[in-house]
Length: 121
Image 1: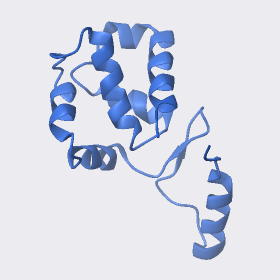
Image 2: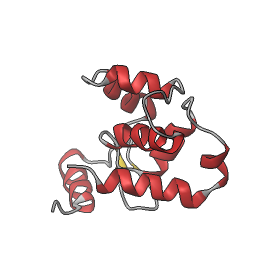
Image 3: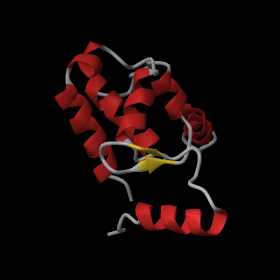
Image 4: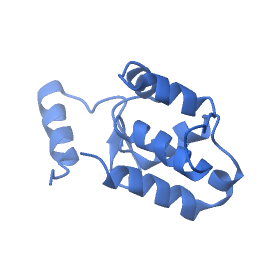
């Protein structure tokens, strides 16, 4: 298991570069994103599975047994590039898949994000 060393890295960065990384954001799960939303989207759009991402991002859930499984697939693709729960939520809300279930059910949002993060290798 990889241990979270965010604080140590921030301290190292500040010591050697004299300031904290400007894009660094801290969110409730303790993960930071050093990438903006646009940088995350750029990375995922440049990946080998970009076509799958673009279809999901546009709201196409074809090929998935349920809309919930399409939701999980999209969040999992994004989670490869950011483990920041707040950023995953805000990115998903911009997608064509985002619907009332995501907006109204915090338990569903949390469970989907946590499953995506727990499946990272």
